[in-house]
Image (cartoon, rainbow, N blue to C red; front, side, top):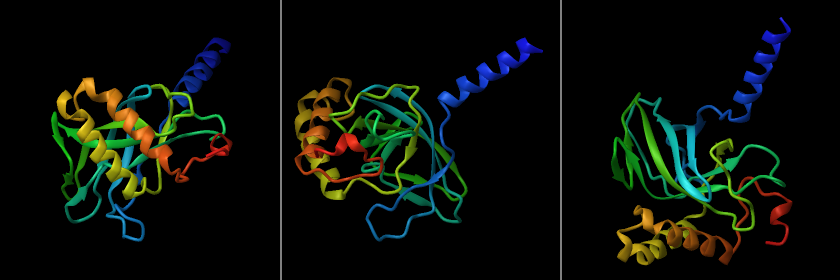
Length: 196
């Protein structure tokens, strides 16, 4: 019985260490706009300072919904004073191996998508695949998102575009530069951001 209890406790602790929140509402593209009703659930993160975040997108509404991933960001679950960097979606998303800047999710459908994400807090440590994240309730301001996109496109043109593996470092630098240029508080701020 003691052995069984130890196995159960160990299994529980292992699962809770990587537990991901359930489906959450996807924020509207712009502040003040009505959200589409689309829901997102984080499946896994493959990366460190940047990488691929796999999400399930569920459309419980009676009409097709369009999603622009750019500007979505993800907050580590836990104490923001000691959490690693938050992740922001940049560029296109992959669905069934095809890259798209905008995704259309049919009424009642659930789609699995892979988002290219980059750390947005240059002063924090890097997350790991074990870091649990939650979808933020808002988006990175459109002005910053657009600046990142425009500059990253220009910086990676000769590398095969933003999605090319060789472009990761250039895109990451562009994200940090635009994020630090004029700091905007986002969900998950902590004392780590006191000097910003």
